[in-house]
Image (cartoon, rainbow, N blue to C red; front, side):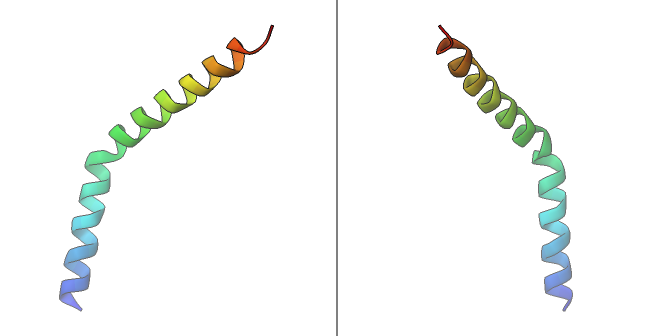
Length: 42
């Protein structure tokens, strides 16, 4: 049980540290999709 708890805590810390990177990646993907959509509006 302690191993599961420690693993979960480690995963939680990892997600906290990488949350800004995931948000950054999602923002770039959204911007590329929006640019492609606007580029086809002619």
